[in-house]
Image 1: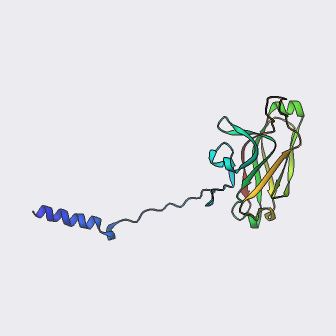
Image 2 (image 1 turned 180 degrees about the horizontal axis):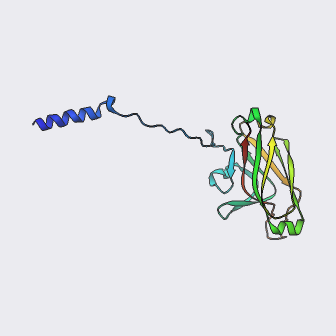
Image 3 (image 1 turned 90 degrees about the vertical axis):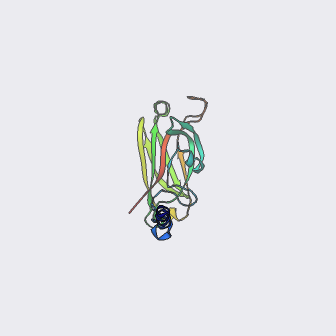
Length: 176
């Protein structure tokens, strides 16, 4: 009988609110806001597909996509981008077939209608396009970034699709 009393007392102590430990809360930085809009897109990530507005082909190699001659994305400005500006960053590759047929390609961009300096690629390989974006271009919660190539492979030249460059990441990098 006394065992039952001790068990009851122990159970009531364990279940009392004063003995419950508070739940741990872990703070994380996710790069997303409540709408899920991201500042950096890994173009192969299915969660990012909605931010790829136009000019992208299907995912290849679980890591990248070919673009067309014109392509566009929507991005969330980086933290304090509306005050300090940012860098527009694109991880891209230029294919051997592109250089063989076209000699070079020039990538141009504009962010919410603000032109960003272009860059010309005259050899094959992996490149990082990184250009300053003024704070005035980053005043909205969602920013449209449009890209264009001066030359691209028309459908039928190499395959049935129009081919521009190969892209793996597009995003903003905060400036301090």
